[in-house]
Length: 67
Image 1 (cartoon, rainbow, N blue to C red):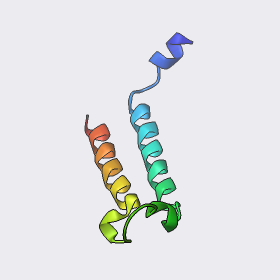
Image 2: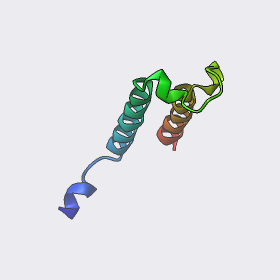
Image 3: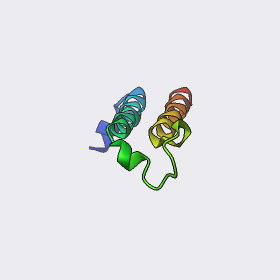
């Protein structure tokens, strides 16, 4: 079993991580607006947590793919 993991190419780890981050982005955009803006004093665009989560995860994906 230990030898099995040694034979898997490292790029598969990047693919799996990228798919996971992409899944989190998709999941965030399916949250209802009432949940996203809960506790916010207004519904301004910059308070939309989906946008912030997407931006942060895109940066994370880029860093993960580069390094």
